[in-house]
Image 1: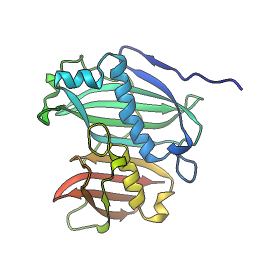
Image 2 (image 1 turned 120 degrees about the vertical axis):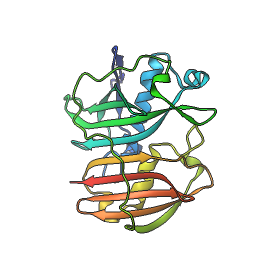
Image 3 (image 1 turned 90 degrees about the vertical axis):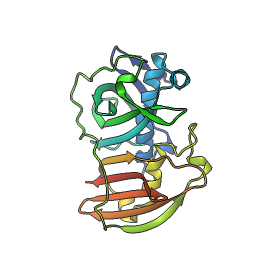
Image 4 (image 1 turned 60 degrees about the vertical axis):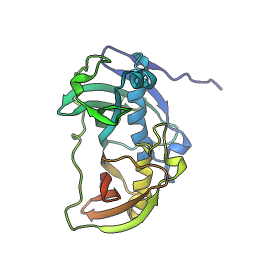
Length: 251
């Protein structure tokens, strides 16, 4: 059997990494889990900056790290176990307090299976203080030269006085990342575990998620959800503050 090497490449304003979906990245139907897609969005952004010498450790020492604020995913075709995806990311300028980054995940024919947009905030990691994008000293922020077939990130919230209580979700050790809070990708599993059973395996068309407050070990996230025509909205709350919110849209 011939072993395959998976590649990566970088241009002045893009980064591409080949990724093979593993069995653990997929759900019981063999399709990629939304949590795995959310994790790819976060990870490939880090790989891009690592390749440019802007590792997390270096950024931390500069007092300038990125926290993910919003994601929008469009699913053109849901990839499956053992597929190899070429995940390409570009910075896409600045909007207000957010620094934008976009993505395409293409299969081996070159067809885009998933496209994504994300918004990040720049934070002083010691003081947990949000910084202005123009205070970033790591590099000049570039703009994506192409149109990404994905809706923009958006603010998600349940209409006031609506929704139903869902089982609360304790934060467990395995949820945490190196920052000591729930990893951004793991919210995909939190959401899918709480969805109505008939939607857990339903064809997914788009996913929007907002990250509002970090959740840490020992806390319990109170969940509320609302079913709409072809969609489900969910919020997580910690001590009266919104932790995250998302909107799942189904085919």
